[in-house]
Image (cartoon, rainbow, N blue to C red):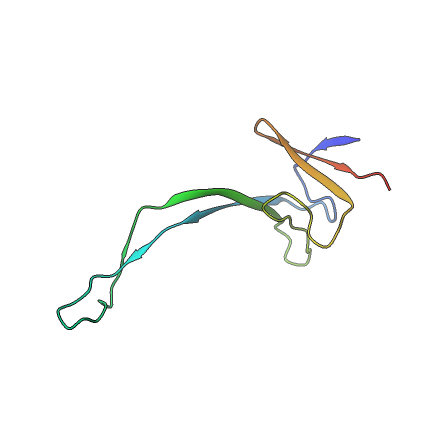
Length: 91
């Protein structure tokens, strides 16, 4: 049975989606040939990946960037449009 993924399937706590970004720290090369001590942060841009985790610090529920549940093959998580869904895999 498919359900909307809006709470942790293990403990019922809230979930959060971690959208991963990348950025560059740009250092100026000084006359001495050394790097400056203060970098500038270059534009942030999304890496187009992320993962879901439980907000309960005592719960270990999380997915990898492919929405596969870590250390557990029990759940199938997927996205339809903007909605995340979950169902239990049949064994």
